Image 1 (cartoon, one colour):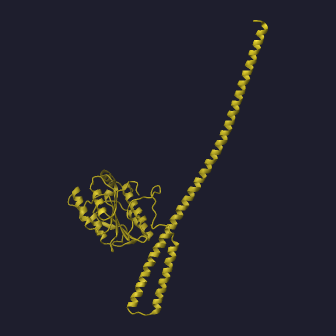
Image 2 (cartoon, helix red, strand yellow):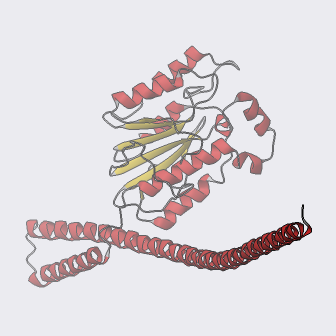
Image 3 (cartoon, one colour):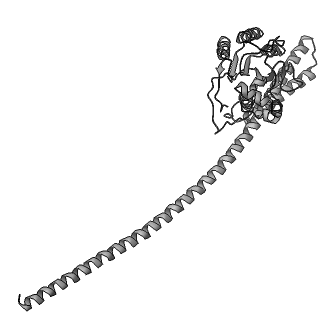
Amino acid sequence: MPRKQKREFTTFNLSFLDVMSCGFGAVVLVFLIIDHSMAVHTEDLNRDLLSEVDLLEEEVTHGREGLVKLRNTLSDVDLQMVEAQGRATRITEDISEYEALIQSLRAEGYTEDADIEQLKAEIRSLEDEVKKLRESAPEDGGNSARTFVGEGNRQYLTGLNLGGRRIAILLDVSSSMLADRLVNIIRLRNMGEDVQRAADKWTRALNTVDWLTAQLPVSSDYQVITFNTQAAPALAGTEGKWLEVADQSQLEGVSAALRKIVPSGGTSLENAFIALQQLSPSPDNIFLITDGLPTQGTNPPRGTKVSGRERQKFYRDAVRQLPGGVPVNVILAPMEGDPMAASEFWQLAQVSQGSFLSPSKDWP
């Protein structure tokens, strides 16, 4: 090859390499520019997102604070409504008494116009007060005397008939209310009273009573009777008496008294139903909270063991003591070794036109 052509070819190769190097450098430069731009854009985007997250967290915090304030306000309004409705009920009863007194005075020929007019004036004053109380009570405040919020603020659909003018609640306080299994009952009976009061099954029973009393109509009367081998009212000194649902302090006193009880002894359902007969007038709705068939009648059994057939006999003897035509609503926490309990209590609820509930362990 001639030397001139060889030099031209070499020069061409060097020029091509220079072009390739420049092109590669340009590509690298463009890549670095793009990478830097993406990094800046990502940093700006992250900063904006973090700002939005902080704003949302602040709004959530304010919302929770507002929710707490609303719940506290609602509780205060419910309490005021209960007190107003209770006063209205008592005033209505006073009006009836005054009207009856006027009628009796007229029937006896009493014609002192001044006294009668004074009684009428008092009646009008009471009626005006009732009207003001009813107007001040929120229309949508509900009819419950207490509030009971379950776990997670849940509302339960149970099918229980919570109405009635005179409502009796029977609570089983026998030793079997400590646990669902016999071995656990024996273990807890050998522990301290504080441990027994805190037993899961017993705590659920107490919460059930609180839930029931929270749903009672304000205008109703109630009584809570505890029973094991004997039966007695939860609030001492109220034997044979009906209590007012509108009296919230007394209602709280009943709950406090129940939480001092330590479950013990056997179960006499017959004595519990006999205790209902002491209430006058008779109840028109009954709630029975128990965990199985009774272990005795009005008196202790002769032996130390009670067969399933004997327990059924004690139960059927007890049912004969119930007042006729009154719904019996059974809330059963089943215990091992008592397979017939659910069937017998379900039949009682059906025959009496009450309801039967065997709740889960997280109810109410």
